[in-house]
Image (tube, rainbow, N blue to C red):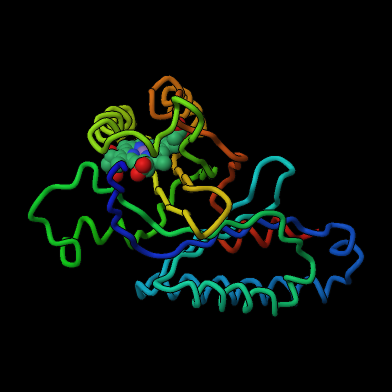
Length: 248
Ligand code: 76R
């Protein structure tokens, strides 16, 4: 049997993709819409306040394309807090005008392939900042789930740790070429959701997502061993921008 990878696990993540029921939204009176937006803003302001106190992280995005209208990303110490946040959102008047279209539950993960010996995970500031990340405030976000393939000769899980480690090193080298242009947060979801990992990328230039993902396609870890789910991109929006987008 191949040796399993030891992972460093951080905050749990909930990616909440929703569409607006525009027909009901238009039919609702101005007063109802204003009340709904006010309740949404008070919910998101609370999430931001929690983030400021390092109780979790929060991001809000307007999604491009028709797979969803908005994405809210929450990260917390426990899944119970993520469930509570979902319920708190559902109880707002605004939620009555939304439909959940996709959701993803996972856990921030750093693999130990490139771990440096002698570093104490619980106290190392760099590792802690990556395990409990403040979501970057770049203009754009990209999310997609993925698996490592298990098909015939192309079975990632049957490779030795050394083989996997060597390939991950190459993968990391490609990634590092995008340092300063794209920030990645890898969340693991084995046993938590339908795919094995969630990939959340941040950049001020959407084209860098395309370039990075395309370049990685040629790397063995992705070319031979990866299968991908649906892709979503969106722009970071403040409460005010959101309010403007929802105003009719
Ligand atoms: O964490 C690190 O920076 C160390 C190096 C590293 C690891 C271990 C790393 C670097 N990744 C790691 C693990 Mn990654 N990554 C992806 C995708 O679209 C595709 O083809 C794949 C989706 C992207 C775009 C990406 C980007 N990475 C992983 C794992 C876990 C594998 C396992 O444990 O078996 C997955 C699924 C995965 C997928 N990766 C980087 C990047 C980038 C940009 C980097 C450089 C980060 C930096 O140096 O800042």
